[in-house]
Amino acid sequence: MAAPLAYPATRYAVAPPIDLSDRSERARLSADAIRAFFNIMARWKIRDEEARLLLGGISNGAFYGLKKQGDRVLDEDRLQAHLLPGRHLQGPEHPLRRGTWPTAG
Image (cartoon, rainbow, N blue to C red; front, top):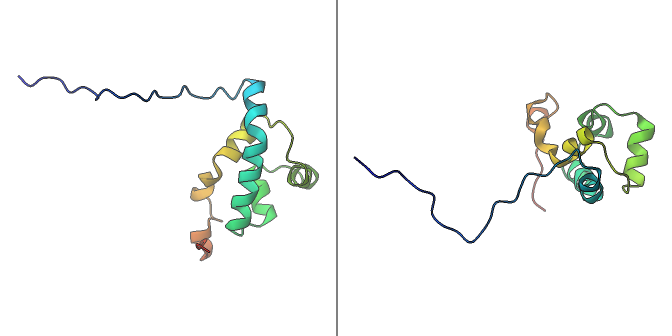
């Protein structure tokens, strides 16, 4: 009988999952997530209307306020949308389906 396989020993520990229900965690992550989201949207040439949909269909005022002042603490759902900008890969407005794709440079 073969010996059971074991994961090799490592000096690196797996980080615990982030608890997005904790306001202090959301406060720590929000500003960077907002900046990253808008940078990706600009790089991929995603229109503001499409970006608003990715954030759950927020209003124009809330969207442009967030774009202008990225120092807000996001709620759990919006933070997940900011952390996962690639989730629109399944949507009909994905750059591949529109015939465009971001290029290096």
